[in-house]
Length: 366
Image (cartoon, rainbow, N blue to C red; front, side, top):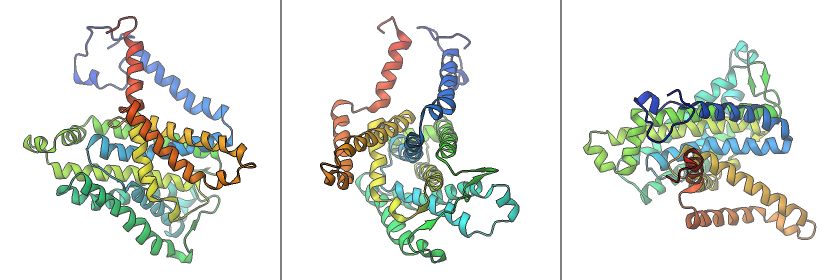
């Protein structure tokens, strides 16, 4: 389709046109502009603090993509995704600190990229283990199963055993210069930001392409009605486990990326509230939409940072406010979810879809 716009009554002629990344010249121009903003505009206008906020947004997007896949596209409820992020983080950290890499891989800065891939695979396999009960249970019972992943993985295995490797106690310290991509040492917020943008783009492309594949159509069929999907010949159990693997894989990438933003990692970085937070992110952003994971992450992180900035001037007069910020944050999180469930139950992605349609169809009301 070579036109700039798709006027009313003009339809795609084949599957390739219908699923093209850039269906019109206008969309291609928007994507080029977005690319320019992400790689040039935001780093130019952001100071170190703002870059750290965007890095948190990127980490949240990477974590929320896996939760969106399970809940939004496959209908598998989960409240233990932080466990798989923790597995990815600790696997990558252990590979960097303890594995006897050949010196040329260390010199070339390839050890960390390889550790991200291995960490993602390990987290995916570990996620499949806790996805096995999905063959027999669903709904509330599956929630309890995924919650068990959090307590078994983080509270028992990582805290009691993995954290003790190398005699480090509870925290794994990552010396400066440890995180490298080739000759590029990740030692500043701007470098972490660029790595985050690349990982978010790659994971989003992987997710979008999977949803357009046979597996993606099977996941959506299972979400809508698993009994009907099975009657149509879809191997429900196989595709559920595949969804858990991909979700864990994305969580492992999130964890392996997050260690680049920390001087040391400990089990306290992966509490159960992180799993609940990620579910809230996709509820606010929009369930069943990749845009939902992105918009929800931006909204929640920016709102919480704005809330903290609003409280800090009051800290001198009311010092207890700063000490109780964690509880204020949790209360604001709960209020945000309640407000969206009442006033915008379809999330920010649905509102974005309506705005796009308004401009695409203007000046025609239909």
